[in-house]
Image (cartoon, rainbow, N blue to C red; front, top):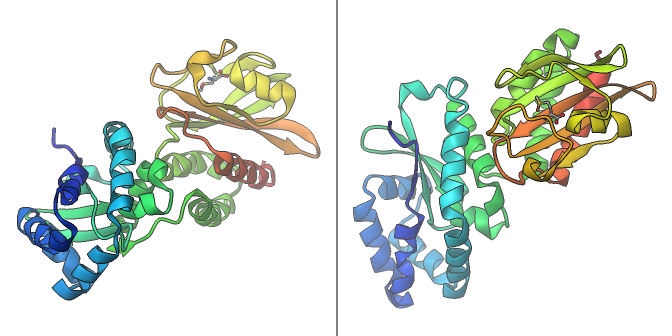
Length: 309
Ligand code: SME
């Protein structure tokens, strides 16, 4: 099977072996090595040798060196995470067309992602250095999914502004989806799964006869169609009436496993007139993926859902 994500960062970071006065010569080598990608990247960003030399000169060796160490720490996992999160969304991203690949590179730090013509297909170039500079290396798989979604919409250059900005843009779409009322909950699950690289099982449970009953969901089928209050992560969140975040499910004793692939889970209650009426449950195949931004975003989603159920 072809590998949809390729890691070229280390090859780009060979620049660190060169004397800084010769960095432009290294860039010329990169241009030859990654033709037509690098020349097309320059064209898209309207760069010439003079501009490139100036930008390279302004990048401190120290900074690039720090980036290199941070990258080497996480590169293998990040590459796998990016590739798996795209493959898991194969239909939504129309991967069968095989008309693009993603290259993880370290370029000039000007734009987080740029789409260029490769030899046979389009290449979504992620400038990992650019993301790292903004402190967003951790979010590489979300930034990559965002870039691919934008590429599918016809955009060829862009930036990723972090989870808060990204989630705010998703909330606008979610408001539109929910205009169709509770019939749209299945589509909402699909939307959340497709747009967040580490939301792998997304579903609703609703309170019925004092228990949680499974509602619309996307992801692997689950045997947990009915959960008593207090049992599992879902039951505990219902009992305590608060959001429950488990970054590592293997450490949770009161847990009902839905898939061996699940590494983390977040459960957010839905309230109506001050009473819990259900919850949104999300499983992730990535380790420790949830942050305060996820909590705030999903609590907002549940407020919107509560208005239509
Ligand atoms: N893991 C949940 C059960 C639901 S499945 O993840 C879909 C729990 O511990 O409550």
